[in-house]
Image (cartoon, rainbow, N blue to C red; front, side):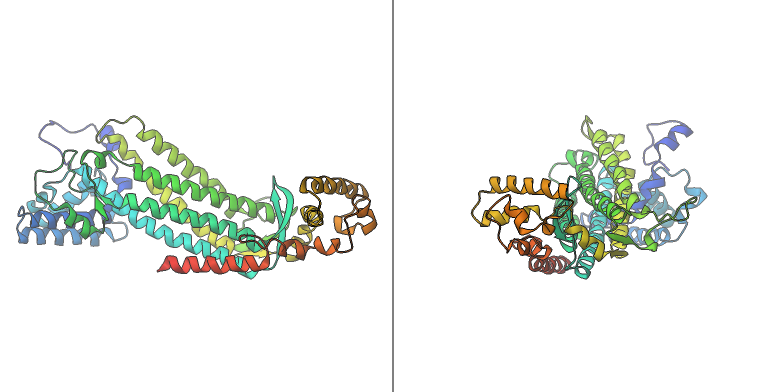
Length: 463
């Protein structure tokens, strides 16, 4: 069934009809669309356009469609193969159920504002579900951090050993990234949660529907203020894809770090069998496919963001059929982000830290050189001079095949008379960690405070 007619003679070309149809994917909007349809029916009843009996009949029919749509395989029935989109499907099915009164539902409404309100309702619900999944991923980070709260690993810059940090400190860095992502998605939700229903095709409606009442019934914070904008606007979809891209960047970076740490060369973590795969040829292989897929799927969402931006560029006001192309990008962004968050949480719950190897790596390759420079600063030497002195000591230690803590006091005093017997305590692993005791540092007491605060943030988010 078409929602337009009279102006046209004959049937649409079959190939064009198939090309034009979106029911295959936009049927995901059906429950959001039904929700908006019921409120619209009630609104035109309140405006005196429909009598109470007609409104009741329409809403009963819409409820029945919802029941049918919940049945597995319902949409695969052959009679729905030629359906243009979910919106025409609802009207056609409603007419079958209640008769010609079903046609009256569309009074005072265009498919343009119908699509817009259904998409916003759908995305709002998905954002709320994503927030729950993201919090669980954050919880998995906290759980792994708490289980290894005192264990050091090397910290890296340029993928070169830099300074010792606690493994928990490393994990909490990703907690903070996801916390920003949650805040961004919550902020984007505010712009999703504006109701466009009542905008008509672009000029508004001739019928006195109460838009504020409809918005309240549907849980929207406000209504759109210009009827042209919301039937063309999909910047809220672009914004969601942008925020999702940032989240996937963070998940991809975490995946990369864990892949590196799980290699035989690093060997800091062991991935559980439940999140690994093998090789069809090499019996010894245990591959981090779960993490590689998280890293790889970030490209899908980046691609969708680029497609949505390109799609929107240069479109004139108001609605254009180009905008139909935003749905598949939106749906796949939602699915990919949600799945990636779930798999990330699963991976984190199937990781074992190789404490001995990580600890040994944390205090080798001169990771305590900065602590040695700071030691000289505390003895009164300017930092730049201290930096130079320690640089020369590192060169000497490399030539001797020794770590800094393996040098003798006399060897160190050859470079500066400021060195004393307390220098070895100053550059111990424990002191290196404990010394970073400012807020946000890697000292054990600070990391414990960060862990406590992280849990409090999650508890507060659930309220």
